[in-house]
Length: 372
Image (cartoon, rainbow, N blue to C red; front, top):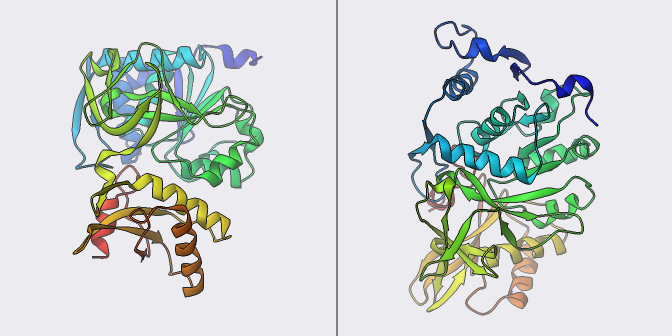
């Protein structure tokens, strides 16, 4: 049971360790503090707009599959998303929310909206690898959302007991590798991988990553209507899309009207000798092969390179210094055993550091271009 103090409805929020009262925030920017940094000012400006009843909000897309752009969302879309998540996790007044994602993108911004709409205590910190290092050691939270890098760092820092005090944890913004998924099995708190995008006001489906209810499939939240287009890509319609049909580039296998298996991005398909190769399938086996060979964990992805004979060849990109020749051959040999002729990477290209988008997601195109 929460203590008496935590059940009191909040009249303020904590931002980078400082308290800001809602009555004061409503008056910003006229009387806003002069010592705010840029991030703090932008967070408080959004909170001001929301508290004052803004009917429309501009959001920045992440740029992970194209040029970042601003999209306009109706307040009712964000309210619907917050209500759906709040109901699913039974989040209520007086509970405590840790906001450690970048609030300039939909994942972090929706954490703010959930807290404001459900009368929860908001503790906001600027995003960094270990956000729990920025709050008091005795601070307790009921719910939070991480990107995989943060979750991996938090676990490495020994914060698992603090996580297990929560009702639920979301993780999104990038894929969760098998090594991290294995670590999550030691947690008792339910951890969910999210599926969604800016245009759907954050996640519309969840996949349980740990515990007896762990599953390889995503389950849509109530009221989300799923379908497929002619390419086999997921379509979404709901109140969070303003009742418009959103056509994604995500190839899926629909198991029923609420459940799907994610296969990969349609725009990450490589045409090798006329055979369509899904890059994400090769990436998963590349990750597993590195682990089986006992190689240090490093980021990797697969992309197409022009080939005179095949049209496009499958190429693996590994972050960091080159592997010793013997280890590289062991890796390629293992992949040859697991993959078909046209799926096998023909080459490994090493990149000192992968390029990322403004929201921290891997930017494949810029990374490939950086070594061409």
